[in-house]
Image 1 (cartoon, rainbow, N blue to C red):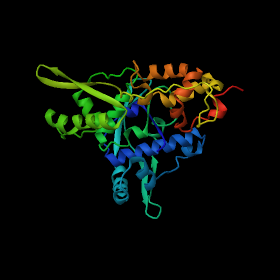
Image 2: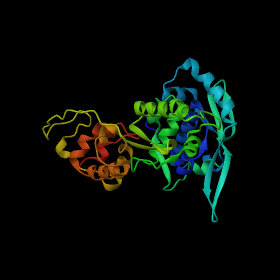
Image 3: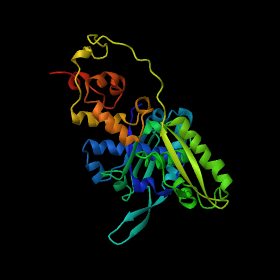
Image 4: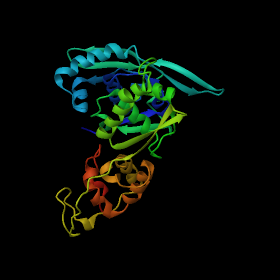
Length: 328
């Protein structure tokens, strides 16, 4: 599976909404598709808000679900996603606007092609395209194994703070809203923890690239909120093999002694792709931003090209050794 990147504005990450698992997965795939069209400068796709198409095969291959159930669950999601809405804050010259919008303007399931087609509501597009600095991104594969909508929401809330590895305190009402817990649902704190918080943490720890823990905050004996701390999973130990610098690697057929470091622009490009990989940064100190800056420096040094070769070749698009990593 490709390491497709999901990019959302922090306003959307912090929005209040409730989506089922299949609905969330459809939104994630649609964000990836729209980002690809934007990256390819197919701006008419956005300017005219053309329908996004998600095939059942794409859904099945990304999330590893059964063919026998995928088609019916996608049909059901089409029926419910149209009615879903979310609330978010939008800065204005004077104060803050509290907005509510639907996710989609229209949606359909096409039987013959087993495809979901939908158009994002106009208010949604600025929250997922042409974003500046206030954004959160992650590879869709990080939540591909997650089977809880609450776990996806928790993961997104956490990685918005990946530069520090810890969140502020989410007051109870704020946490419930951002996790998509409906009013009157799991109203007792014990139920909220048992049915929402703890299962979501278990899934994040099991299926994603981070390990998370949480702390309860109280006033007297009453729990008033939660905060979270997290870190990348530790990389598995890899035995280092001594190599003759004249050895020719079967992958690229070029001797180690011919390698050179990347240019600064190339290093920035591939550091962006690698800095969240736990196999590389799992035991490093600091947050993801620190890891990216360290990789930018390392990738400009010849010895690290060989060390990270297997990960570079797995990037999408892949690293091309014969054009990027060698002396002229």
